[in-house]
Length: 224
Length: 103
Image: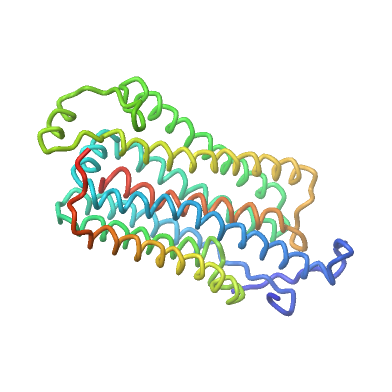
C-alpha cells in the first residue's frame, strides 16, 4: 500500500491545529452523522422484520409485486457508483483533476439512472393502486387468495415499501446534490492530494446510501 | 485523533476493481439463492450475504480497514444497539401467547 503525505502548507481553519487535524475532525463528524443514519434506517428495518414475522403471507405476496430485475439493476448501478466515488478520491490523491471530475460525473449519472428506474417502479405501483395502508386500492386475485388465508393487510407491505425506498431515495437525491457541489468545486481545482476532505465525507455518505440498498434489495424484492 | 503522521492510505486501483467484481458476484449469488425455497432460512441467508457485501463496502470503499480503530468502534456501537433493539423486540413478538390479531 502506498501512502500520500498530506501537505503541511495547506491553509486550515484557525480552530484546528493542522490540516490533518481538520481532516480527521471532519471525518469523525461525518461518521457520527452516519451513526444517526444507521439508527434511523435501523428502526425501519427492525419494524419490517417484526411485521414480517407476524404476517409472513402478506409480505410474501407483497414481494411478488416487485420486479427483482429492476431491483438488481439498481443494485448494480449503486455498487458501480460506489466504485467511481471511491476512485474520485483516489485520483484526488494522485492530483489528477480530470479523472476526479470524470468519476464524479459518472457517480452523478448513476444517481440519475437509479432515480429513473425508481420513477418507473413507483408510477407503475401507483397506477395499479398498490399503495400504503388504507390507500391500498388494488383488487386482483392475489388479494382474494390472501383473504382466504385470513389476511387483508397487503397495504402494510406497501407502507414499508414506500417508506423505506422513499427515505432511501431522498438520500440518493441529497447525495446527488452533494456530488453536484463537489463537481463545482472540483472544476475550480480545489481538490488535490493535500486537500480532499469534502470528497472523503460525501463519499462516506454515498457509500452508506449504497450500504442501505444492499440490505433493502434482498429484503424487499427477493425474500418478501 | 486519527493517523499520527498525516499519511493517508491509497488503495491500489486493482483492489478497487476486485472489490466491485466481488460485490457484483455476491449480488448474483443473492438473486440465485432467493430462487430456491429454504423456508424461513431464506431471510437469514439473504441477510448474511448482504452483511458480507456491507463488510466489503465498509472495509475498502469506506476505508475502515486502513483507518483508525476509532471508526470501527463508532460504527460497531451503532450496529450493536441496533441488534439490541431488534433482539428484544423480536423476543416480544415470538413469545406472545395470544395469536396475532388477524387484520
